[in-house]
Amino acid sequence: MNATDPCFAAWLSQETGIDAHSLGINALERAVLERVRTTRAGSAAAGSGDATVDAAVDTYWQHLNDSPDERLALIEALVVPETWFFRDREAFVALARLANEKLARDPARVLRVLSVPCSSGEEPYSVAMALLDAGIGPERFSIDAIDISARVIELAQRAVYGRNSFRGGEYAFRERHFSSTEGGWVLNERVQQTVRFAQANLFESSHNGGARYDVIFCRNVLIYFHRDAQDRAIQILDGRLAEDGTIFVGPAETGLMMRHALSSARIPLAFAFQRTPPEEAAPRSVASFGKIPDARVTPAAGTALHSVYGTTRPAATPAVAPVRVRAPVSNVPVPAVSAPAPAPACASASASSLVEARRLADAGQFDKAEHEAQQFVILNGTDAEAFYLLGLIADARGRSADASDYYRKTLYLDPAHYEALTHLATLLDMTGDSAGAQQLMRRAQRAAARMPATQDMTDTPLNSPRGAHGTRRH
Image (cartoon, rainbow, N blue to C red; front, side):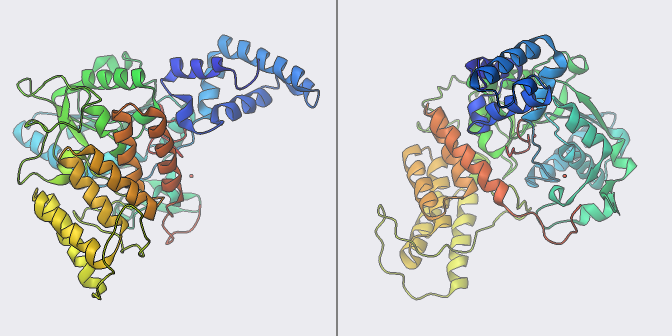
């Protein structure tokens, strides 16, 4: 037996629901060999040849099956948290609004929130800060935070954070809720006391007695599960959701949610879902989702583009502003597109026209938005953001083939375009190309990891395989 034996991948899948291939090439093999060395199972055989090393792996496999502690240790070796405060900030803006609305309707209500997996605590603490900053007292809400990793739970309970936990350029919350020390930034006790942490597996339905939650955050972990585990996890989450509750997922997981009886909450850039009303529910095949225009899911005039398909932005640059376009990418020829030579134009005017196209799309005026974006390309040459916007418009209108084509053109110009990678991965997954989808998600992970953390601070660090709020992978 060796570290590449499929037994290990099968064990990981059964234990956590994680598809080993989604963690990256050789990630599981490296983790197994690391644990073999750590447990000294192969120390006597060091340098003694492949046969003896294989024997050490045999011994380790037996140890893994006999020891609950070692099973957890191997999972921990695959957990590299990659998360930060207020990631995808619009989700927390939406949370505060929804919470105030619910509590205003029912003054005796206590809002219940679940963060799973919670990783090293940035997400549940962001939930707490968002609610407190919205004027909601700590007695009006409770937050449960669970993760399969004991190590990250311990980090969360320490509540001391370095610069990588603060990204995006908006740090007023840090001044309100943290104190600076030599070891990093320490979260104040008032926020810490609102979160209850527990080590548990997402698939352990017995956690907390089956309580129902008004809000569930389960972001950027479902994409690492195999298909059956994805469906099972979503069913478990749905079972834990209050009747009028809301689930927030990651930007690349919107398609997964719509395989079930869940519909977009139509909150721009929040990636929020609620139960589909029974009168609107209808069987939807994975293969046809996003292809067949349907009155129930095709946006009507006036429907915001972001609300329809859960558009994304680079995870490392959250912002509340509804419109953000990148600086135009330098003109690079794309074989599949022919356009006249760029006409002289003011750069600011060019950027403004793309902003206008995005505004029209957000307003549901897709014909005008598409025309504006195409005119931008004619006048300025091929541009990654223009193609990405055209892809979003095609996606929202159910034209999956066109959307895929535009996303591919975006990636030709900007191979690390995070949003195009995640949206194209979702389209591939929905059409059955899981291998292609996984490959694109690994590229998206690498692109997110390369996004720089903020530079204005001094240096001081579920199932969250390789980081549940985005592994290097929450």
